[in-house]
Image (cartoon, rainbow, N blue to C red; front, side, top):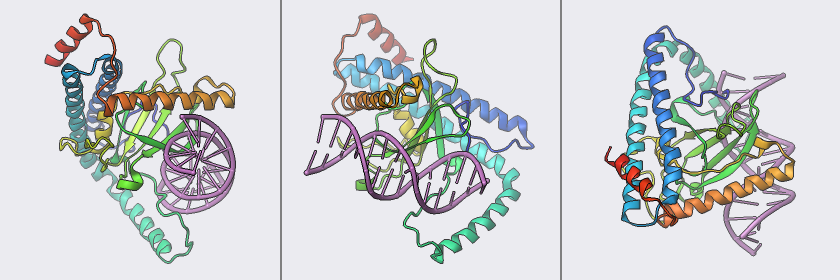
Length: 286
DNA sequence: CTGATTTGACCTAC
DNA sequence: GTAGGTCAAATCAG
């Protein structure tokens, strides 16, 4: 799968119904943009709030907004899929044949390989968004791989839920810096793609995936998404390897500390100008 | 010492 | 054959 430069859901090949599909596409783009903006805003605002009731209220409002957009995104995806399915029916048949045969070969233990699922993920099971803060999404992730993607300047990092083993949480995400954003003028933007649903509860016992409103995956994660990052991807500045390591580490540290302040303990106390609060509250009543 | 990250190898899909 | 995704040993950091 190629890096989708726009950072949104990868689309199947252009179909015969360009109008409706492109409508969906642009709607999804807009929603994703909205999610990204809210995410960025939340990343700025929440850490600046003192841990009091208002803070929780604000956090809840952000969450609600993101949940709403996630639901809308899901609806659109479903629509999009059902419409594009017809177009892909023929292709699907071919794929199915192939898949079956390959499954059989696996069953036969032709390889006896210890690695089980190296399947490519289905496009339908993902949600992507653009954010300058790819790590601070209220979830705990563990990096398990990094790869240079064809024609992309920056490597893609692969994360899975920290609780994958203990709670068998299947959620994963990939983070990739967008090619255009190298820094100076515009904030570095990352394309974050969430795969699979969180079935875990995060450590403070707050359920993550389950507030019911989050039936969809990543959106769930992504809705919680949030805040984060810092991630200066090592490759951003393309410094020495050592620098890379340093920056990654520090980014993760920041991420973690943000997580902690965000997730578990309420939020890091911070001074907040009254105008900021007013703006927030106004935003909340919106 | 323990847990997280890095990174090259490996696997599967295309 | 190539590209994307995952594994797991080695390495790093607290």
